[in-house]
Length: 280
Image (cartoon, rainbow, N blue to C red; front, side):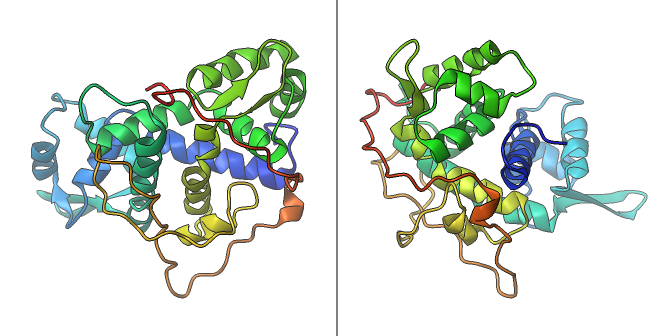
């Protein structure tokens, strides 16, 4: 069943990315996934690596990650159970440095240097606002859209004024710009800069190699990928990270421009974002 008035292919793409964000955004989920990098761990070994979790908090988190298909529970014997990444979980890990690169470039500067994990968590919080993914998709494709038109596209079964709370939140977060009441909305430089993040999440959620994000019909780009940078947080702003190479033997994604509404209009100049960047 359609969730917006967008074409079916776009609607499905947004739904997959929204579901992917819902898997990894809950508190501690990314930290648990990172703690499981490497050989499978017994519960006690994993608990020692995430010792800030209180008693009883780790088990439900592990269960939700297993249910999401990101973590695998292997019972070797009654007393020997280990947890490790599934193939889907392993494939997700290269998405995280892409998020860090965006955060380093666009999030407001914190009073203290932030580790990469906090950069990821802050960024995911912005992306999981209600209706955020659909609004960002439409604004990227149509460039400038009135609030009423956005409401017709993103929430066709609701009163059109319902679009304004999520829009105002995106403006507050620094991802969307407007010149005032009654004026159209457009992506800010930070919102437009989400291309690698949302394109990569789209590729991962569709089971495609991550380097296919560059060919996404909305968030893709034609320029050559820059060289990758080390994953180091809170240093001088680096060039954006390159996407991981395609895994051999994998087919190209079944994305077609005809599945999506036109986004071939001439690009408008990007205004400079306010000092400090989007709010954390």
